Image 1 (cartoon, rainbow over the protein chains, first blue to last red):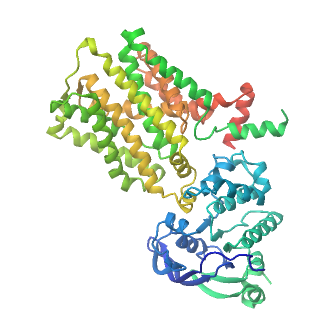
Image 2 (image 1 turned 90 degrees about the vertical axis):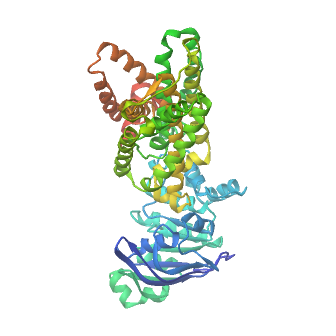
Length: 243
Length: 333
């Protein structure tokens, strides 16, 4: 994976993070970091706690202990809107579009907190990146195909001008050819200087596109390192790649 | 029109966005202006039309929380009732001024909604609906047991003499126009989009930085202020309030049915639904006094099956019954 032309943003450091729902603990002392301009993958099976971790970083899941810092800013305990303003945006699992709004309205919703004057140029730039969405501009988002919906979800997050993009299960339910085009899109986004954390069950894809990766199992980080090495790791091969 | 562009058009108009259809909106505005003539043109029907305007306002109140944010409240009559009692209490203290009545009702109800909303707007779906019903029942009982509110005996209000009675009609008209205007402004604003985002997907809204509880409280406070203002005008015009009048079941249920019939989450829908249902209800009540409420039940079932987005939806469809059936199938798919 080549480094981006301009690496903006700061380093995200998650330190000894524990979180859960009600009495059930899901994450146990999770520690990870994402440097500016990196694509990092978080892999693991169902119920490993991947989405909970993203939720904890985005502020939609309460953290029990530990910390999340972005540069010198502490994100732990902040409301999600403050975290969005800090430049950390999530593309949630299952796309979660505003189905009865048009593609255009969905994209504009991504810029909800922005007050600057660059929303229109950004919209143009993002439509340039995703020409299919220009064709579907006035369609209701709920009526698009799965691949198109995933594009809208990513584009909507981009409208928030992220420095760090957290993408949850991008490939879920999509045909391989669509996944390939989305990966190409991620690489383009990465080239603009955005750091990316991808959370995937499709381990092969995640490790191919990322430079580093973490393996999450039952709420704990069990393995981490350069993605190329993890691809060759016997444990990863056996557990996730079926070889 | 090619098949592709026809289907594209249908995808777009099938819901008509958060404003609703513009033709429907113009129809509502023109009808609303005509209603201004009632005291002069049809003085004998003033009370009837004032009641209709009250229902229109209540429907708009419900539309803000139930239509735009998708939080179905079964307790909006609480705000109508408290608004009515605001006027009654002011009157008991010698203040008989409609502006003061409405101002107090708006402030008290917005504040009360925010206070109650803080815990119960964290509930979702049916749980929220049941909680609102609980609030309505509790407030009805509390008011009925407080001497300051006249208990179950109620409170009388000083009304103007017969010759000036149309002042209540104009006040009701202004409150209703205010409710429509407020809905129009909200639907055009970022605030309106935040409400719709919460309705469509609360979790997605949250990760985009739209704080769900904060915006839901704002929506409910607006909803409560509108219902409260309607109550504040109703009480002095009626001359008397007690818990069974102020917290009447009709004032709770009818606005919901009216909004659903007209089109939830649209600017013109509540007006169109309220006008049609009030008119039909009035006629049925004259002819079939015992069973006319059955009609409302039938309307709910018919609308859910045949017009899931209400009458406003039909304004946007071109091409007759076939387009309607196609859109219906697409909507349900």
